[in-house]
View 1 (cartoon, rainbow over the protein chains, first blue to last red):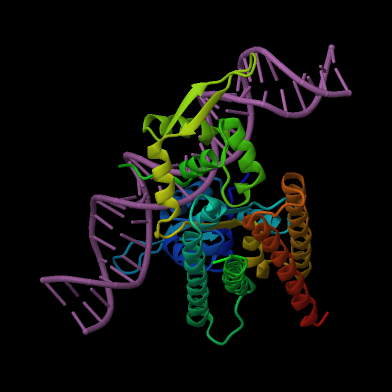
View 2: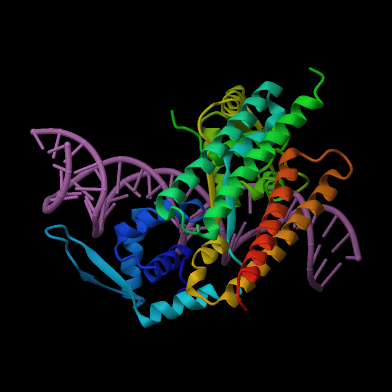
Length: 177
Length: 177
DNA sequence: GGCCACATGTAATATGTTACATGATTGT
DNA sequence: ACAATCATGTAACATATTACATGTGGCC
């Protein structure tokens, strides 16, 4: 019994939400889960094959005109697997890789102005990403309710921007210059 | 000219901050950068060898009694490489992998009570991690000033806990049950 | 004719974790 | 005697990105 990778579970989830092809899943991922769980074609297609081999999904060819197209759907086993993951109690993987924080961590090795430049770039970047997320929200959901995780993403980016605002103030205030 | 991986740069940075052996670096990483940039022995030791091959660090044997021990230090080239990274303008890698958010994303596939259980577990978990970070701060820095990134980590965990508090309220309020 | 969106897939490479092997020293 | 800490390292495996190859169909 090989435990499924989180990426495999994303795929099962996307099938449950209505996606049918690898291409579609990649698009959904880029518009929604990418921020907290990304995946590339190089993962998606091989994973779909593995999932079919283990009987959690089935596929059939459904070309659109001359464009080849393979549509997947969950089997009963796949749906069961998905649901047992969704309600499980186990610890969730939580990882951050943030090169900017790394540079801030090593800030004492460079001049104050360099740290300030870094801090200001981050404020800007986080605000841009927040705006980008809002754009996606408008585009995909318009005036309907936006999904909680989209709000989470926007608010997290804004929190970060504010944290770096505050950090800039700390740096400029207690500095004799 | 092979561009250095972020992990290689962490190593250069830790050398600049005073670490000397792979073991020491691993410890520092586990106590400080792990939260936003982790690394295992399986990365550290091979990376040190590569860095020495490219002339950015040098090592010599410095056994402590009978315990073998290899102490590294930055070369001029290594220090230059480190500093040029620290002041560079390029975009910083920023990645999150959060399985809990993934489950929240798929929340509509399960019952409300299951989502609520997930949300409450996250509140708890984020508060525990915040406490864990505070513990590290006390242990390593005591009453001295704590580094900005440590505050960042604590505050980020607390922000998360509060976000999930608020989300719980949203779920229980506009629910007819 | 040319570009973009749709669509699938692989190979090479990069990155990272886990488990294991080895052994000295310190403290209980 | 034994556990914990100091210390180095590798092999197997897992995970993920990038670049490439290939082709259709719709639109301007």
